[in-house]
Amino acid sequence: MLLVELIRKNPEEVKRKLAKKNFNQPEIVDEIISLDTKRKKIQTALDDFLSQRNTISKEIGSLMQSGQKELAENKKNEISTIKENTLVLEADLKVVEDKLFNQLVTLPNLPSDLVPEGKTPEENVCTFIVKEIPVLSEDAKPHWELTEKYDIVDFELGVKLTGAGFPVYKGKGAILQRALISFFLDEAGKAGYNEVIPPLMVNEESAFATGQLPDKEGQMYHVTEDKFYLIPTAEVPITNILRGELLKENQLPIKYTGYTPCFRREAGSYGKDVRGLNRLHQFDKVEIVQAQHPDKSYETLDEMAKHVENLLIKLELPYRILRLCGGDMSFASALTYDFEAYSGAQKKWLEVSSVSNFETFQSNRLKLRFKNADGQNILAHTLNGSALALPRIVACLLENNQTPEGIKIPSVLQKYTGFDMIK
Image (cartoon, rainbow, N blue to C red):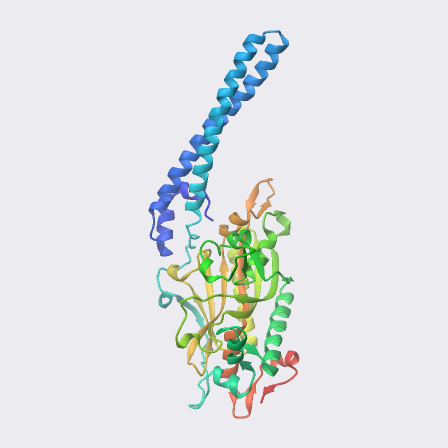
């Protein structure tokens, strides 16, 4: 959530940056400033009344001690009037504060100056692409045919058990899935991330704090009876570990990693882009999360991106890195790098990771602060990245490594799988 002070300081700059992110309601910025001005005016009047009440209360005590009961009673009547006025002002303040809050939560995070202009994915900027793209034989099969041929992922059984988008991993497919999770977690551990196993459901406060509510409510599975949400990513529960914390500056950075299944409704998804493992309602992902000092967060973003890049290199997957344009970024992000792996049989790039800096947008909602050397409470910056999301990684591994003898397993995974080939 944006800070009101930031909006008041330079409203035109805020409007310009919001427009860069494809947010076309600049009037909300003016409404927020107007509501905040009204809030301050009411608060000042309320503080004056409270000050008067305290002063008169002391006068009453002195008058009673000196035997001036009639004057004391008159002062008590003044306090009664002040209390009535105070109740009215408190009610007015609550109404204005609620309106101000409801307007603030509609604003997305402001994009960093590094974010390119653009409204569609086609306008994202490619910052790196591998030189060699695999060229498979004409009879190369897409992964949904390979999974059926080798009986390692069963989509129809998933439909029987739950519905479309909930595949069942079998045999060496299940082992490959577990191997990838272990590999990703081990690599995160080597990079200094502390592993956690968080809940798979969160409450409304947690979903709000990381920006899923109210922006992505329709994309999450909602357990209505208990007002819980199935997590769309481990980012939500892991980041919320730090909700409400006041840290010491020397505790930063705080680094967490965790593996979870993730659940997304993916409402409106259809067509060839959702075939097989391309888009699922339940999928596995290893997440990396950091809370960092504001002065170091962009350096940290580059380090996290490098971590993801190294995973793809070790898996021997061709990849490219995109810096997302304003119109293709998430609601909460200030700067995002997407990683895409090349799918040889589908002949297309598939997104496998997003690495983002949220600056203070999440920490303002989280009330995540640290005390600096001057004793000031400062909002930390939060960052997260997929390291990595599994379905499309599996799709690319199967397609790119298919041979007449079977599917080769990358050497880095063989100590986890116990086999070097799916036959």
